[in-house]
Image 1 (cartoon, rainbow, N blue to C red):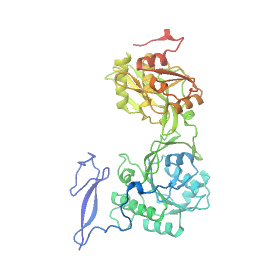
Image 2 (cartoon, rainbow, N blue to C red):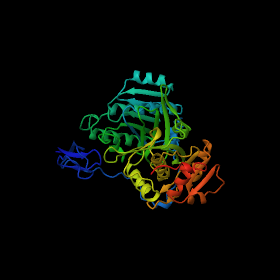
Image 3 (cartoon, one colour):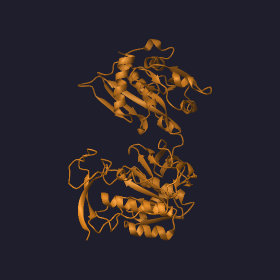
Image 4 (cartoon, rainbow, N blue to C red):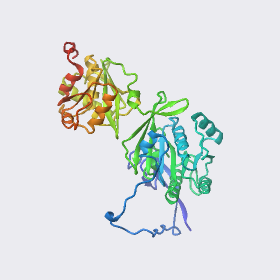
Length: 462
Protein backbone atom coordinates (compact mmCIF):
# COMPACT_ATOMS: atom_id res chain seq x y z
CA UNK A 1 0.00 0.00 0.00
CA UNK A 2 1.34 3.48 -0.79
CA UNK A 3 1.72 5.68 2.25
CA UNK A 4 1.51 9.46 2.62
CA UNK A 5 4.37 11.48 3.95
CA UNK A 6 5.40 15.14 3.92
CA UNK A 7 8.29 17.06 2.50
CA UNK A 8 9.22 20.73 2.61
CA UNK A 9 9.89 22.51 -0.69
CA UNK A 10 11.41 25.98 -1.09
CA UNK A 11 9.06 28.24 -3.05
CA UNK A 12 12.00 30.28 -4.33
CA UNK A 13 14.47 27.70 -5.68
CA UNK A 14 12.67 24.32 -5.43
CA UNK A 15 15.02 22.79 -2.81
CA UNK A 16 13.30 19.85 -1.04
CA UNK A 17 13.99 18.38 2.38
CA UNK A 18 12.25 16.02 4.77
CA UNK A 19 12.70 18.38 7.74
CA UNK A 20 11.12 21.80 8.37
CA UNK A 21 13.74 24.55 8.21
CA UNK A 22 13.46 28.25 8.85
CA UNK A 23 16.00 29.13 6.15
CA UNK A 24 16.58 27.43 2.80
CA UNK A 25 20.16 26.06 2.70
CA UNK A 26 20.34 26.50 -1.09
CA UNK A 27 19.08 30.07 -1.72
CA UNK A 28 19.20 31.40 1.88
CA UNK A 29 15.56 32.59 1.80
CA UNK A 30 13.83 32.78 5.19
CA UNK A 31 10.38 31.23 5.62
CA UNK A 32 10.25 29.95 2.04
CA UNK A 33 9.94 26.19 2.77
CA UNK A 34 6.34 25.04 2.38
CA UNK A 35 5.03 21.63 3.41
CA UNK A 36 3.43 19.42 0.78
CA UNK A 37 2.21 15.82 0.82
CA UNK A 38 3.83 13.14 -1.33
CA UNK A 39 3.06 9.48 -1.90
CA UNK A 40 5.77 6.89 -1.20
CA UNK A 41 5.97 3.15 -0.84
CA UNK A 42 6.28 -0.06 -2.83
CA UNK A 43 3.06 0.62 -4.74
CA UNK A 44 4.53 3.65 -6.49
CA UNK A 45 6.99 3.32 -9.36
CA UNK A 46 8.35 5.73 -11.94
CA UNK A 47 6.21 6.12 -15.06
CA UNK A 48 7.59 4.23 -18.06
CA UNK A 49 9.27 6.32 -20.70
CA UNK A 50 7.26 7.08 -23.82
CA UNK A 51 8.46 5.46 -26.96
CA UNK A 52 7.73 7.49 -30.08
CA UNK A 53 10.97 9.42 -30.57
CA UNK A 54 14.44 8.18 -31.37
CA UNK A 55 17.77 10.03 -30.98
CA UNK A 56 18.82 11.90 -34.13
CA UNK A 57 21.95 13.82 -35.11
CA UNK A 58 21.41 17.52 -34.56
CA UNK A 59 22.64 18.40 -38.05
CA UNK A 60 19.93 16.17 -39.58
CA UNK A 61 17.01 17.68 -37.69
CA UNK A 62 15.04 19.94 -40.02
CA UNK A 63 14.05 23.45 -38.98
CA UNK A 64 10.65 25.04 -39.41
CA UNK A 65 9.24 28.51 -38.85
CA UNK A 66 7.31 28.81 -35.60
CA UNK A 67 3.65 29.65 -36.40
CA UNK A 68 2.44 32.64 -34.41
CA UNK A 69 -0.93 34.15 -33.61
CA UNK A 70 -0.76 37.99 -33.55
CA UNK A 71 -2.87 39.61 -30.83
CA UNK A 72 -3.25 42.96 -32.59
CA UNK A 73 -1.37 44.76 -29.77
CA UNK A 74 1.91 45.62 -31.48
CA UNK A 75 3.75 46.25 -28.20
CA UNK A 76 2.56 42.93 -26.76
CA UNK A 77 3.50 41.05 -29.94
CA UNK A 78 6.91 42.76 -30.02
CA UNK A 79 7.84 41.34 -26.61
CA UNK A 80 6.51 37.88 -27.51
CA UNK A 81 8.57 37.90 -30.70
CA UNK A 82 5.68 38.32 -33.15
CA UNK A 83 2.70 36.77 -31.38
CA UNK A 84 1.60 33.74 -29.38
CA UNK A 85 3.08 30.41 -30.45
CA UNK A 86 0.69 27.49 -30.80
CA UNK A 87 1.22 24.97 -28.01
CA UNK A 88 3.18 27.40 -25.82
CA UNK A 89 2.68 28.13 -22.13
CA UNK A 90 3.06 31.83 -21.29
CA UNK A 91 3.24 33.25 -17.77
CA UNK A 92 2.23 36.90 -17.30
CA UNK A 93 3.33 38.21 -13.91
CA UNK A 94 3.28 41.50 -12.11
CA UNK A 95 2.22 43.29 -8.95
CA UNK A 96 -1.48 43.28 -8.02
CA UNK A 97 -3.32 46.21 -9.61
CA UNK A 98 -0.70 46.97 -12.27
CA UNK A 99 -3.09 46.05 -15.12
CA UNK A 100 -2.37 42.42 -16.00
CA UNK A 101 -6.04 41.51 -16.50
CA UNK A 102 -6.61 44.64 -18.58
CA UNK A 103 -3.65 43.86 -20.81
CA UNK A 104 -4.71 40.23 -21.19
CA UNK A 105 -8.33 41.05 -22.05
CA UNK A 106 -7.27 43.56 -24.71
CA UNK A 107 -4.81 41.06 -26.22
CA UNK A 108 -7.39 38.26 -26.22
CA UNK A 109 -9.91 40.56 -27.90
CA UNK A 110 -7.54 40.95 -30.85
CA UNK A 111 -6.61 37.26 -30.81
CA UNK A 112 -10.30 36.25 -31.01
CA UNK A 113 -10.58 37.76 -34.48
CA UNK A 114 -8.70 34.75 -35.81
CA UNK A 115 -10.27 31.95 -33.74
CA UNK A 116 -12.14 30.95 -30.62
CA UNK A 117 -10.51 32.06 -27.35
CA UNK A 118 -11.50 31.07 -23.80
CA UNK A 119 -10.82 33.49 -20.94
CA UNK A 120 -11.18 31.88 -17.51
CA UNK A 121 -11.27 34.01 -14.38
CA UNK A 122 -11.11 32.63 -10.88
CA UNK A 123 -11.31 36.06 -9.29
CA UNK A 124 -14.17 37.81 -11.09
CA UNK A 125 -17.64 36.94 -12.30
CA UNK A 126 -18.63 36.95 -15.95
CA UNK A 127 -20.56 40.17 -15.38
CA UNK A 128 -17.48 41.91 -14.02
CA UNK A 129 -15.42 40.76 -17.00
CA UNK A 130 -18.15 41.98 -19.36
CA UNK A 131 -18.18 45.40 -17.68
CA UNK A 132 -14.43 45.72 -18.15
CA UNK A 133 -14.71 44.52 -21.74
CA UNK A 134 -17.26 47.23 -22.56
CA UNK A 135 -15.07 49.87 -20.96
CA UNK A 136 -12.09 48.70 -23.00
CA UNK A 137 -14.11 48.41 -26.21
CA UNK A 138 -13.54 44.63 -26.47
CA UNK A 139 -16.54 42.99 -28.14
CA UNK A 140 -15.18 40.00 -30.10
CA UNK A 141 -17.96 37.37 -30.53
CA UNK A 142 -15.48 34.49 -30.37
CA UNK A 143 -14.01 35.62 -27.04
CA UNK A 144 -15.69 33.32 -24.51
CA UNK A 145 -15.59 34.00 -20.76
CA UNK A 146 -15.89 31.53 -17.91
CA UNK A 147 -15.85 32.06 -14.14
CA UNK A 148 -14.43 28.82 -12.73
CA UNK A 149 -11.76 27.67 -10.27
CA UNK A 150 -11.86 23.88 -10.75
CA UNK A 151 -9.19 22.96 -13.27
CA UNK A 152 -10.93 19.75 -14.31
CA UNK A 153 -13.99 21.74 -15.46
CA UNK A 154 -11.80 24.33 -17.19
CA UNK A 155 -10.04 21.67 -19.24
CA UNK A 156 -13.34 20.03 -20.14
CA UNK A 157 -14.72 23.32 -21.48
CA UNK A 158 -11.52 24.07 -23.40
CA UNK A 159 -11.59 20.64 -25.08
CA UNK A 160 -15.29 20.87 -25.96
CA UNK A 161 -14.97 24.36 -27.46
CA UNK A 162 -11.83 23.54 -29.51
CA UNK A 163 -10.26 26.89 -28.66
CA UNK A 164 -7.04 28.17 -30.20
CA UNK A 165 -6.01 29.95 -27.00
CA UNK A 166 -6.79 29.55 -23.30
CA UNK A 167 -6.14 32.18 -20.61
CA UNK A 168 -6.36 31.49 -16.87
CA UNK A 169 -6.53 34.50 -14.54
CA UNK A 170 -4.97 33.66 -12.18
CA UNK A 171 -3.06 30.44 -11.64
CA UNK A 172 -3.20 30.96 -7.87
CA UNK A 173 -7.01 30.67 -7.83
CA UNK A 174 -7.46 27.34 -9.66
CA UNK A 175 -7.18 23.98 -7.94
CA UNK A 176 -7.19 20.26 -8.66
CA UNK A 177 -9.14 17.89 -6.43
CA UNK A 178 -6.44 15.22 -6.86
CA UNK A 179 -3.64 17.50 -5.64
CA UNK A 180 -2.80 18.26 -2.04
CA UNK A 181 -2.97 21.69 -0.48
CA UNK A 182 -5.23 24.71 -0.73
CA UNK A 183 -5.65 26.84 -3.88
CA UNK A 184 -2.57 29.01 -4.26
CA UNK A 185 -0.28 26.62 -2.39
CA UNK A 186 2.98 25.55 -3.97
CA UNK A 187 1.75 22.01 -4.66
CA UNK A 188 -1.50 23.19 -6.27
CA UNK A 189 0.17 25.84 -8.43
CA UNK A 190 2.80 23.44 -9.76
CA UNK A 191 0.30 20.66 -10.40
CA UNK A 192 -2.12 23.00 -12.20
CA UNK A 193 0.66 24.47 -14.34
CA UNK A 194 1.95 20.99 -15.19
CA UNK A 195 -1.52 19.86 -16.30
CA UNK A 196 -1.98 23.00 -18.44
CA UNK A 197 1.48 22.49 -19.97
CA UNK A 198 0.53 18.96 -21.01
CA UNK A 199 -2.69 20.25 -22.58
CA UNK A 200 -0.79 22.95 -24.50
CA UNK A 201 1.79 20.53 -25.92
CA UNK A 202 -0.70 17.78 -26.78
CA UNK A 203 -3.46 19.93 -28.32
CA UNK A 204 -1.47 22.87 -29.72
CA UNK A 205 -3.52 25.39 -27.74
CA UNK A 206 -1.64 28.51 -26.65
CA UNK A 207 -2.09 28.86 -22.87
CA UNK A 208 -1.57 32.10 -20.94
CA UNK A 209 -1.37 32.07 -17.15
CA UNK A 210 -1.62 35.17 -14.98
CA UNK A 211 0.45 35.07 -11.80
CA UNK A 212 0.50 37.55 -8.95
CA UNK A 213 3.83 38.56 -7.45
CA UNK A 214 3.88 38.82 -3.68
CA UNK A 215 6.15 41.09 -1.65
CA UNK A 216 9.04 38.63 -1.78
CA UNK A 217 8.27 37.76 -5.42
CA UNK A 218 8.26 34.01 -4.90
CA UNK A 219 5.47 32.48 -2.80
CA UNK A 220 3.25 30.47 -5.18
CA UNK A 221 3.98 33.11 -7.76
CA UNK A 222 5.67 33.33 -11.16
CA UNK A 223 9.15 32.42 -9.91
CA UNK A 224 7.90 29.00 -8.86
CA UNK A 225 6.88 28.31 -12.46
CA UNK A 226 9.64 29.97 -14.47
CA UNK A 227 11.44 26.67 -15.20
CA UNK A 228 8.19 25.09 -16.41
CA UNK A 229 6.75 27.63 -18.85
CA UNK A 230 8.00 28.67 -22.29
CA UNK A 231 7.67 32.45 -21.87
CA UNK A 232 7.79 34.61 -18.74
CA UNK A 233 6.43 38.15 -19.16
CA UNK A 234 6.59 40.79 -16.44
CA UNK A 235 4.25 43.77 -16.44
CA UNK A 236 5.53 46.64 -14.31
CA UNK A 237 4.89 50.27 -13.54
CA UNK A 238 4.21 52.72 -10.75
CA UNK A 239 0.56 53.09 -9.76
CA UNK A 240 0.94 56.85 -9.53
CA UNK A 241 2.32 56.93 -13.09
CA UNK A 242 0.39 55.97 -16.20
CA UNK A 243 3.44 54.37 -17.83
CA UNK A 244 3.50 50.56 -17.97
CA UNK A 245 6.36 48.41 -19.27
CA UNK A 246 6.17 44.82 -20.50
CA UNK A 247 9.38 42.78 -20.48
CA UNK A 248 10.26 39.18 -21.28
CA UNK A 249 12.37 37.50 -18.61
CA UNK A 250 12.37 34.20 -20.49
CA UNK A 251 11.38 33.46 -24.08
CA UNK A 252 12.06 30.16 -25.84
CA UNK A 253 10.72 31.56 -29.10
CA UNK A 254 12.30 35.01 -29.25
CA UNK A 255 14.46 37.65 -27.63
CA UNK A 256 14.37 38.66 -23.96
CA UNK A 257 15.70 42.16 -24.65
CA UNK A 258 12.57 43.71 -26.16
CA UNK A 259 10.31 46.00 -24.13
CA UNK A 260 6.71 47.03 -24.74
CA UNK A 261 5.52 50.44 -23.55
CA UNK A 262 1.90 51.22 -22.65
CA UNK A 263 0.06 54.13 -21.07
CA UNK A 264 -2.78 53.40 -18.65
CA UNK A 265 -5.88 55.47 -19.32
CA UNK A 266 -9.51 55.36 -18.23
CA UNK A 267 -10.45 53.46 -21.39
CA UNK A 268 -7.64 50.93 -20.90
CA UNK A 269 -4.06 50.50 -22.00
CA UNK A 270 -2.88 52.52 -24.97
CA UNK A 271 0.20 51.48 -26.92
CA UNK A 272 3.02 54.04 -27.01
CA UNK A 273 4.70 53.81 -30.43
CA UNK A 274 7.07 56.68 -29.53
CA UNK A 275 8.16 56.03 -25.93
CA UNK A 276 11.15 58.40 -26.14
CA UNK A 277 8.81 61.39 -26.50
CA UNK A 278 6.79 60.14 -23.51
CA UNK A 279 9.85 59.82 -21.27
CA UNK A 280 11.18 63.29 -22.26
CA UNK A 281 7.84 65.13 -22.28
CA UNK A 282 8.41 66.89 -18.93
CA UNK A 283 12.17 67.22 -19.04
CA UNK A 284 13.31 70.54 -17.48
CA UNK A 285 15.59 71.97 -20.19
CA UNK A 286 18.60 73.85 -18.85
CA UNK A 287 18.33 72.54 -15.28
CA UNK A 288 21.48 71.16 -13.61
CA UNK A 289 21.44 67.45 -12.80
CA UNK A 290 19.68 66.26 -15.97
CA UNK A 291 21.15 64.30 -18.88
CA UNK A 292 19.59 62.29 -21.71
CA UNK A 293 20.90 58.86 -22.62
CA UNK A 294 20.29 57.20 -25.98
CA UNK A 295 19.59 53.65 -24.83
CA UNK A 296 18.80 50.48 -26.72
CA UNK A 297 16.24 47.91 -25.56
CA UNK A 298 16.51 44.96 -27.92
CA UNK A 299 16.04 46.45 -31.38
CA UNK A 300 14.28 49.59 -30.09
CA UNK A 301 16.22 52.79 -29.35
CA UNK A 302 14.91 54.76 -26.38
CA UNK A 303 15.86 58.22 -25.13
CA UNK A 304 15.52 58.47 -21.36
CA UNK A 305 16.30 61.25 -18.90
CA UNK A 306 18.68 60.54 -16.02
CA UNK A 307 18.34 62.91 -13.06
CA UNK A 308 20.75 63.52 -10.18
CA UNK A 309 20.77 65.64 -7.05
CA UNK A 310 23.89 66.33 -5.00
CA UNK A 311 23.50 67.93 -1.56
CA UNK A 312 25.59 68.58 1.53
CA UNK A 313 25.08 65.76 4.04
CA UNK A 314 23.65 66.28 7.51
CA UNK A 315 25.43 63.11 8.65
CA UNK A 316 27.11 60.23 6.87
CA UNK A 317 26.78 60.60 3.07
CA UNK A 318 23.69 58.88 1.69
CA UNK A 319 23.10 57.21 -1.67
CA UNK A 320 19.74 56.51 -3.30
CA UNK A 321 19.10 55.21 -6.81
CA UNK A 322 15.82 54.51 -8.60
CA UNK A 323 15.74 52.87 -12.02
CA UNK A 324 19.45 52.07 -12.06
CA UNK A 325 21.76 49.65 -10.24
CA UNK A 326 22.90 51.29 -6.98
CA UNK A 327 26.22 49.42 -7.14
CA UNK A 328 26.84 50.93 -10.57
CA UNK A 329 26.09 54.36 -9.13
CA UNK A 330 28.62 53.84 -6.32
CA UNK A 331 31.26 52.73 -8.83
CA UNK A 332 30.73 55.76 -11.08
CA UNK A 333 30.86 58.15 -8.14
CA UNK A 334 34.32 56.83 -7.29
CA UNK A 335 35.42 57.16 -10.93
CA UNK A 336 34.06 60.73 -11.09
CA UNK A 337 36.09 61.82 -8.07
CA UNK A 338 39.31 59.96 -8.89
CA UNK A 339 39.45 60.36 -12.68
CA UNK A 340 37.48 63.56 -13.38
CA UNK A 341 38.05 65.63 -10.23
CA UNK A 342 34.36 65.96 -9.31
CA UNK A 343 34.04 65.81 -5.52
CA UNK A 344 30.99 63.70 -4.70
CA UNK A 345 32.08 60.94 -2.30
CA UNK A 346 31.47 63.14 0.76
CA UNK A 347 28.08 64.37 -0.53
CA UNK A 348 24.53 63.04 -0.52
CA UNK A 349 23.80 61.74 -4.04
CA UNK A 350 20.33 60.85 -5.32
CA UNK A 351 19.79 59.39 -8.80
CA UNK A 352 16.53 58.77 -10.63
CA UNK A 353 15.51 57.57 -14.09
CA UNK A 354 12.48 59.63 -15.14
CA UNK A 355 9.27 57.85 -16.10
CA UNK A 356 9.86 54.77 -13.95
CA UNK A 357 12.14 53.22 -16.58
CA UNK A 358 14.85 50.73 -15.62
CA UNK A 359 18.30 51.26 -17.16
CA UNK A 360 20.34 48.07 -17.20
CA UNK A 361 22.85 48.51 -20.01
CA UNK A 362 26.37 49.95 -19.41
CA UNK A 363 25.75 52.51 -22.19
CA UNK A 364 23.95 54.63 -19.58
CA UNK A 365 27.18 55.20 -17.61
CA UNK A 366 28.15 58.40 -19.42
CA UNK A 367 24.73 60.03 -18.95
CA UNK A 368 24.68 59.08 -15.27
CA UNK A 369 28.15 60.55 -14.73
CA UNK A 370 27.17 63.72 -16.62
CA UNK A 371 23.99 64.17 -14.55
CA UNK A 372 25.89 63.78 -11.26
CA UNK A 373 28.70 66.11 -12.34
CA UNK A 374 26.13 68.64 -13.57
CA UNK A 375 24.35 68.59 -10.21
CA UNK A 376 27.61 68.79 -8.27
CA UNK A 377 28.91 71.79 -10.24
CA UNK A 378 25.58 73.54 -10.73
CA UNK A 379 26.05 73.70 -14.52
CA UNK A 380 23.43 72.26 -16.88
CA UNK A 381 24.16 69.82 -19.65
CA UNK A 382 23.70 71.44 -23.06
CA UNK A 383 19.92 70.88 -23.73
CA UNK A 384 20.27 69.73 -27.36
CA UNK A 385 22.88 67.08 -26.51
CA UNK A 386 22.43 63.39 -25.78
CA UNK A 387 25.12 60.86 -24.91
CA UNK A 388 25.87 57.19 -24.43
CA UNK A 389 28.93 55.14 -23.51
CA UNK A 390 30.34 52.76 -20.93
CA UNK A 391 32.75 54.21 -18.37
CA UNK A 392 35.62 52.04 -17.13
CA UNK A 393 37.46 52.19 -13.81
CA UNK A 394 40.39 54.00 -15.45
CA UNK A 395 38.02 56.75 -16.58
CA UNK A 396 38.01 55.62 -20.21
CA UNK A 397 34.80 55.77 -22.25
CA UNK A 398 34.25 52.43 -24.00
CA UNK A 399 32.32 51.61 -27.15
CA UNK A 400 28.82 50.10 -26.99
CA UNK A 401 26.71 48.20 -29.50
CA UNK A 402 24.20 49.75 -31.89
CA UNK A 403 25.32 53.38 -32.26
CA UNK A 404 23.40 53.92 -35.54
CA UNK A 405 19.84 53.39 -34.23
CA UNK A 406 20.65 55.46 -31.15
CA UNK A 407 21.81 58.38 -33.29
CA UNK A 408 18.83 58.09 -35.62
CA UNK A 409 16.38 58.23 -32.69
CA UNK A 410 18.13 61.26 -31.21
CA UNK A 411 17.99 63.09 -34.55
CA UNK A 412 14.32 62.19 -35.00
CA UNK A 413 13.46 63.84 -31.68
CA UNK A 414 15.30 67.04 -32.60
CA UNK A 415 18.61 66.67 -30.78
CA UNK A 416 21.50 68.26 -32.63
CA UNK A 417 24.53 66.67 -30.99
CA UNK A 418 25.51 63.35 -29.47
CA UNK A 419 28.58 62.62 -27.34
CA UNK A 420 29.75 59.05 -27.95
CA UNK A 421 32.84 56.91 -27.36
CA UNK A 422 35.53 57.63 -29.93
CA UNK A 423 35.64 53.95 -30.86
CA UNK A 424 31.91 53.98 -31.63
CA UNK A 425 32.26 57.13 -33.74
CA UNK A 426 35.06 55.53 -35.76
CA UNK A 427 32.92 52.47 -36.52
CA UNK A 428 29.96 54.36 -38.00
CA UNK A 429 29.21 53.02 -41.48
CA UNK A 430 27.42 56.12 -42.79
CA UNK A 431 27.24 59.84 -42.18
CA UNK A 432 25.21 60.38 -38.97
CA UNK A 433 22.06 62.56 -39.06
CA UNK A 434 23.43 64.88 -36.35
CA UNK A 435 26.74 66.16 -35.01
CA UNK A 436 28.70 63.37 -33.33
CA UNK A 437 31.48 64.15 -30.87
CA UNK A 438 33.81 61.30 -29.97
CA UNK A 439 35.44 61.22 -26.52
CA UNK A 440 38.09 58.94 -25.07
CA UNK A 441 37.82 59.56 -21.33
CA UNK A 442 35.36 60.83 -18.76
CA UNK A 443 37.14 64.13 -18.12
CA UNK A 444 37.05 64.98 -21.82
CA UNK A 445 33.39 63.99 -22.05
CA UNK A 446 32.46 66.33 -19.19
CA UNK A 447 34.31 69.17 -20.91
CA UNK A 448 32.08 68.69 -23.94
CA UNK A 449 28.84 68.04 -22.09
CA UNK A 450 28.97 70.62 -19.31
CA UNK A 451 30.84 73.51 -20.89
CA UNK A 452 29.94 74.00 -24.57
CA UNK A 453 31.52 76.86 -26.54
CA UNK A 454 30.54 80.23 -25.13
CA UNK A 455 30.03 78.93 -21.60
CA UNK A 456 33.61 78.14 -20.69
CA UNK A 457 33.66 80.91 -18.12
CA UNK A 458 30.73 79.42 -16.20
CA UNK A 459 32.69 76.55 -14.74
CA UNK A 460 31.91 76.30 -11.08
CA UNK A 461 31.91 73.88 -8.22
CA UNK A 462 34.55 72.01 -6.27
